[in-house]
Length: 373
Image 1 (cartoon, rainbow, N blue to C red):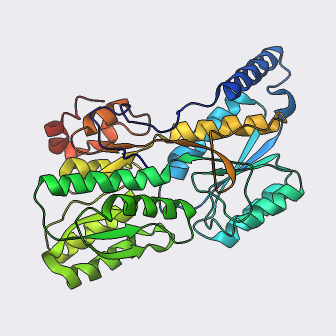
Image 2 (tube, rainbow, N blue to C red):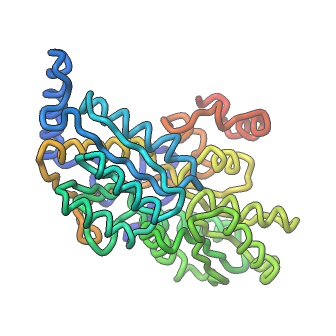
């Protein structure tokens, strides 16, 4: 896999696959959107075959605030543009696979025409796919793949590339600073296949780096508190022999940082992923080394567009295949203090005002972020 490294600009990232939909998909979407607009203007409602349909949007947990803040409203907004009288039924399973199954069953009972799911458990979600398929309802896996029974489509950022990107960025930082010691690897949930891809990407980056992997942990349900507890134990075990921490997302990275602070020792470079406000603040203040900017609007809108195609009776082609599923994968951008101001300035996910609260105003000013919003 080609490494993706930190860049000075938020869009100047090397990609192995095209970011946009295929030409055929774009033509179909343009025609569908035009038809929807014409229907709206005539007062007949948008969307031809998709008019009045219900779509289930099932998210996995509340450990990350992104699902309520970004994914759900962005998906619904784009869906409304494509199909003015379609209804989006949103549910969050709060890291409970059984609850997500119940939410899917409830959505099917309400007559949904499509399910978009970010699975709590990638294997357990195969049951949802089987149930939906028996009723002729397409399933689009979102952010995390479904294993066992392939869904109809998969949309996500390239999670293996994310792991490789944060890992390589960290190794380059440690080498540049002449760091000595080993690494801790804090992975995501063991039931999340996307976490497994990130984990593999991290190993791609660090296994031959020359820095010993001291210990590795799969964090149940991505819980920051679990990550903090585990890292705290490793601090006791390895002391100042920890040169850096490769954490799979901003929540686990934040937990790792909290563990070092609680132990009263210097925080080594710690990675992240998701570009949460708290992570941007930690990067500005020097507590967190990097994160991944993966604009959720890209995947949320792409998911809505693919869902619209299914509602129109079409079968969108994937740009690649992953886990036997037609897939569209987008490339990430690594964010460090070097390009934080530029990424914040161009972000539709967070603003300079949100990042640069009173506590972080001086740090923001030093990086030029106060003037970037």
